[in-house]
Amino acid sequence: MFKLVFLLKRRPDLTVQAFHAHLREVHGPRVCEQPAVRRYVQSYTLLQGYSKSELLFDGIEELWFDSGEARDRFVYRGTAGGAPNGDFFDASRTVIMPVDLHVMKAGAPVEGGVKSIEFVNRRADMPIERFGRYWLEHHGPLACHIEGFRRYEQNHLCAEGYAADPAPAFDGLAVTWFDSTDAMKRTVGTPAYKATREDESRFLRPGHLPFIITREARLKA
Image 1 (cartoon, rainbow, N blue to C red):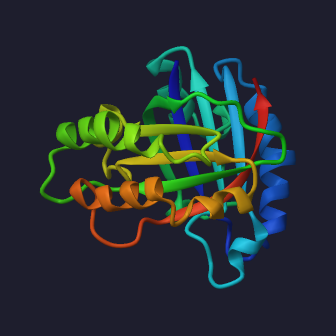
Image 2: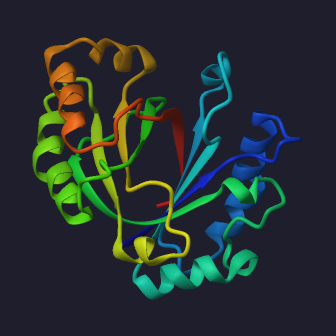
């Protein structure tokens, strides 16, 4: 199947709670009505994540289609296709990513668990193909040794994404599921965690790797 991701930031005059409610209760049903959308997941940021500063995004949409054509039609049809229509989010900060999905650890998320979404960018001196291969074939298997992962996926920006003008701000998304925030925190400092973080300098842009912690809702299976 063909996957599409929307990274959404709320309109400045909305609270996080109001944004999440609209995404779930108003926008979500519109998307579910679209027959081209075969599977649909929303993820909402945890409110405690805002205790120190504003987050990069407030919500994530993940959609699956039977074909690349169906995916592209959904994006360009706008409101009629169920794509975000600007009545609750900041269009200037929306990121649309057609991605190739790679499941690195195929565990089933638990009810009430949390989902970490990391926004990945390659080193400036690393070609796209080499970056994707290293992430998939070396870094991914290394990260799978972190015992706290319930599930682990890599979402690589696909060729259609790089061809867009402008191209999305990220080369990919690393998505991991944990039983709880405490379970996630317990992985920090473990040998596998340290080895995984040390490896990032070999293929990722220097500096802090931005991320958000969310809980997901499956609106259409």
